[in-house]
Amino acid sequence: MTTSDLASQLAASTINPQVYTLRPDYVALLIVADNLPGGPSDEASDGWLRDAEAAAAARLATDAPEDRPHVALWREAFRSFGAKPQRTRNSLEALLRRVPDGLPRINRLADLYNAVSILHEVPVGGEDLDRYVGAARLIRADGSEPFETVADGQAVIEHPEPGEVVWADDAGATCRRWNWRQCTRTQLTPATTRALFIIDALGPDAVVTATAAGGDLEARLAALGPTVRTARRLLTPPSA
Image 1 (tube, rainbow, N blue to C red):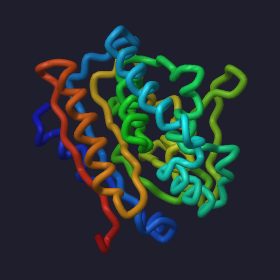
Image 2: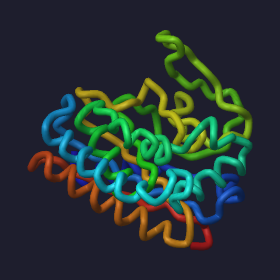
Image 3: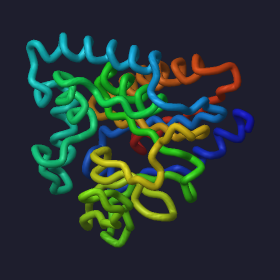
Image 4: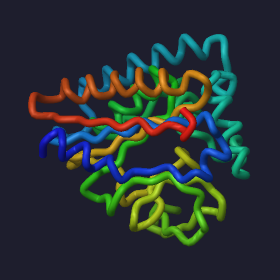
């Protein structure tokens, strides 16, 4: 797959205008990658996470997670569509709260994007492109979208609340409440070789924040092997 082919994967991705009525400052940076050497967590990915843990611990020595600027913005965003941020935390806050006990070691690719999320203090998600159906889009759910997850150790299908902000494809919701919880269908695994990464940013510096995190993410992906290819697309508000 060429860089042009990767870019075509992004061309149909959209953000519904209804999302911008909630947060006109929202920016999404989408990155697709091919020829990835998947695999389990290893010494290298453990090192990425240890560096992220150290950086976060220094910041959290003086600030509670909810007081970090980007976390506070995401709490406001969750409230805008009726979610309670104390109960359903944005992915950045959820990671920051795990720093004292150690970040999870999941697999090489998940560890990589979690490290970038912590270091740049911005929500980052990762999806297996081979499990995707159609293009990624950010919408306000009507409540009918199936969301595959696990409850009490069993596979179940849930549905978002009407009006909830979700990432979705043609088969259903892939991530609920903007960046709260990813579905099991498209989650990255040690076998993943093609992936979509989503960086969510808010605030007056959203473009700068997303671009910096994306540059770091792409550099780390490229370092995984000489055949890794990436492409990106920045989605900004209509007036931006």
